[in-house]
Length: 174
Image 1 (spheres, helix red, strand yellow):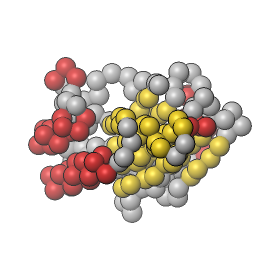
Image 2: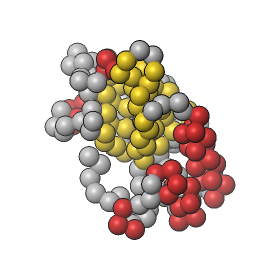
Image 3: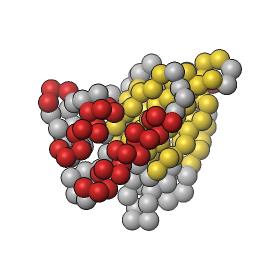
Image 4: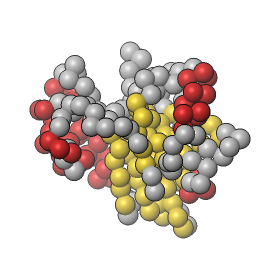
């Protein structure tokens, strides 16, 4: 399964969503975790091509919101998508019956401009949701913008950082 992330910067307009759909046709993916969508209202849409788009809502400052774009091969396996906080979403996939066999967490980690308390709260929430989930397999996709003070949470949940690089993107999203 090809799972990608994309920092959308904003999917508040129909034009931005159209652009996302066009860009998505150019890559091979099963699920794209979307961050910083900045939507004021949730959106669940099924397109003529068979792709499904789930977008959550941002906070009252217009910050955050996460979602997922699921490829045409995968929609029949979707159990649910929930926005757990403005920065954390959960896509549950199933293969047989009602037992989810895969959970994908989409997380937009706080940047260095956030207060330390907000960063700690984010990782505590992520850990809580991760532990609550009853899936057999779990995968987290998160933008690589972590504060150094939060590495103990991030490393435990996300499995460390590639090449020792922190607070930087380490390559293309997909």
